[in-house]
Image 1 (cartoon, rainbow, N blue to C red):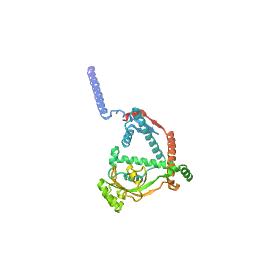
Image 2 (cartoon, rainbow, N blue to C red; image 1 turned 90 degrees about the vertical axis):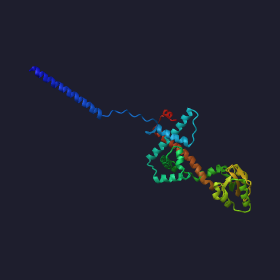
Image 3 (cartoon, rainbow, N blue to C red; image 1 turned 120 degrees about the vertical axis):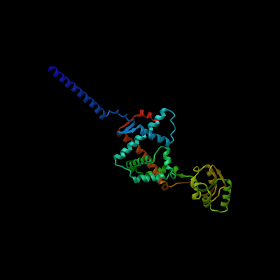
Image 4 (cartoon, helix red, strand yellow; image 1 turned 180 degrees about the horizontal axis):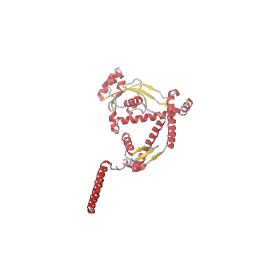
Amino acid sequence: MKAGLSNVMKRIFLGSLIAIAAAAVVAVVYFGLTHEVPKPKAPKVKLVAEVNGKPITVEFFNEKYSRFTLRFHVPVAESPSSASELKLGFLNKLIETELLLQEAQLRGLTVNEEELDREISQLKEDYPKDTLNEALERIGLKLEEWKEDRKEKLLIDKLIQREIDSVIHVSDDEIRDYYNANRDQFQQPLMVHARQIVVATEEEANALRTRLIRGEDFAEVARLHSLSPDAESGGDLGVFAKGQMPEEFDDVVFRYRVGSISSVVKSPYGYHIFKVEDRIRPRLRGIEEVRDEIAAGIFQGRQEAFFKEWLDSLKKQAKIVIYPENLEDIP
């Protein structure tokens, strides 16, 4: 009886062990399938600076710096030290831009779509049709990125207008004092008003000159035959002083009397015929003529000084951290 009981107990004990082992295997399989393996932490993004907690990453700097060097044809630095100085200088500009954008946001300034569209339309006029995208591609910039850059510039302009320009005043006394102290600056030299016709060959130039001497209208002949862009305005070169036009022009137009038709003149641009429309004697320009010019000069000088002082104060109040060692990662 005891032996039979012992065998039963053994079977129960072994069965329990097997059940426990099976449950353990199931648990391992279950948890192994359903529980995710811990992922390694992503590497920290490298920074070149922080401005009031806002990071400027190596990637962002590299993108902006590459565009800058392409757009302005920045030559390769002659030494590692000069390259570092250039990068640090550019980083300082990025930091200043970020400070100004933060200040604009703090003051609730924005740029709406209408303002942005107006700005972009004006800028597009500087490019021939369908060449804007090509110009942007040459500096690695997409149209939408360019628009974002223009939006930031408009926002900063608004901020400067509010914080700097609005407090600058140029008085009549300041304008008069400047004029009296700088009269030599407003001495106008001898000037001429002239027209031109430009053609490709000397033979054609001589033939046209004969027609002009016989009395044909100079402006009309220029519109019909001149190769120069000013042909649309009858060859009108406007009013200019010596040194403002190519030397070949000056040697002719300043020697002729009003109404004279010049001889044929050769230049790198072709064969020219000139007509002197007027000669303006040297004189001192009056204060009323130059009032706006003087005011703009005083305003600009004062604006630059005020802006530098104001920006320096923003920098002193800001928390700026620079990581110059990470600039070495940038080619």
